[in-house]
Length: 230
Image (cartoon, rainbow, N blue to C red; front, side, top):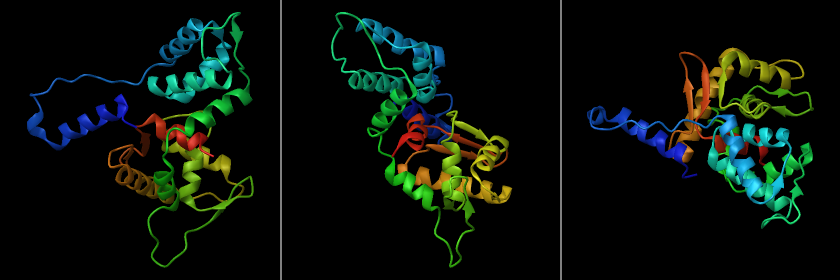
């Protein structure tokens, strides 16, 4: 996506791959923004247009932005488009702020971040060697293997960039009608998903920590796309 988070990640990876660079560079942290900082983007921007949204709506957008100020700006821009706000409002206007409004804004914003090819590869998983993967029945009568199941679990509420194994297993269990994948099946698939995504994007968008069983999405746009693409 060419955002600051992605560039910072690439710079860190370059230093790790080239130890000679250590001591010759200055570290500048590009941490993800905190929710209250993201909310300021919406509140200040809407106020400048003499428009307002409920605090719950602004907080929901901040949660979906997952620490990315660029994504928060996109969500605010789409909110204005959805409410036909393109200039300062006279009189002031209250923006639609219910659940349907949030869904419309997020779906429309997700269309601007195309991860379709990468997500398709992640869903498919690595090539099988003549043996079909085990299938699982979800509570909404969907039959799937472990790869789409993990991605669906990651896309559940609340949006979280980092999934530790116990929490990921709870999310998977909430989706399964009966049997759920074994622990080794989940951790093995997480490793493959990370490799597939990073190779597809030609950069590290997912990190799988096999020692601590932590699945870390390093690009908020990818998590957002998993949650809202149609």
